[in-house]
Image (cartoon, rainbow, N blue to C red; front, side):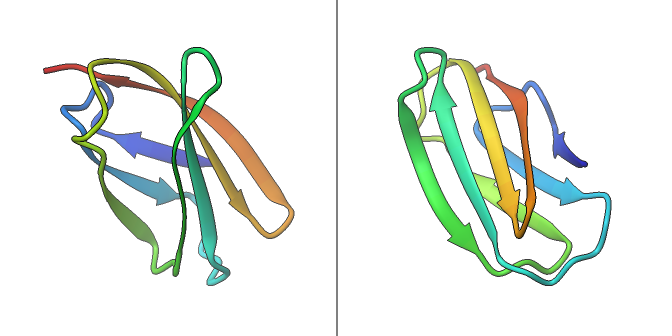
Length: 79
C-alpha cells in the first residue's frame, strides 16, 4: 500500500510506499473525469516528493504501479 502526505495538499506532496521495493514506480494522476494530467516514471528510494502545483484545485486519482503492484488513491488539491 502507499500513503499520500499531506492530503488534502496544495500540490506539493509525498508518496510513501509501505514496503521497500527498489523497482521504478510509475505514477499517473487523473482528474475526476479520468483524463491523465501527469504520468511519469521515477526511480524509487522510499519516498517520492511530487510537485503538482500546475494542477488546479480539485479531486484527483493517483495510480501507482510498481512491478505487479497497482493501486489507486484519491488526492484533493486545495489552495
